[in-house]
Image (cartoon, rainbow, N blue to C red; front, side, top):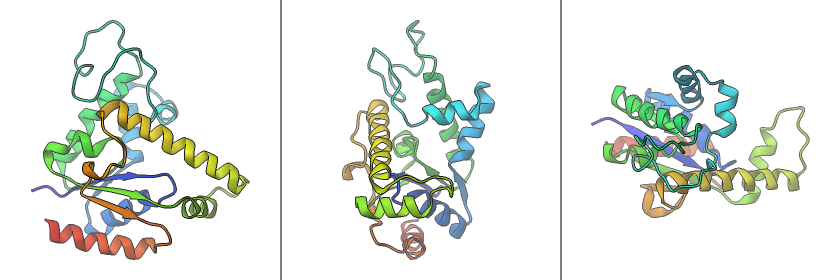
Length: 203
């Protein structure tokens, strides 16, 4: 059985870092920004463009979701940006078949559900998310706590809409994940180590 771990995360929860640490500790592949690079190669679109629309709800006038009505549709109203999501859908399956891996975001928990991954969702209280984002912000960025809170809320709203649009499921809902992890005030390294123990026991 492949060890496939999918990571859903609120912005500022530290989920991405934990996912990377898990991959390093278990010595398995880690996919996040690498997915953008590969999609850019397959679509001839720039990485900057893909990054701009990634995990944001496309603006279309008809209901669709991954693996269902739009995936192979010849509908002439097909939104150009949706080609990115079909490429991503295929790529995630390829990566999961290729080797054990950790995949961050991109509805991977839903897309790969038939492969029985460990689906983890990371969340945290707002003060913890604000502190983590401020501690890690670029040196030339001077957002106030209020501005950072607004950014966090906007990004999480976009992720929730994206997830709901393509899966028809609620983002972060407990029934869609095997483990919900609250990172508020938590040592990221220690949590990563604990999760590695959980994953080893699971498999």
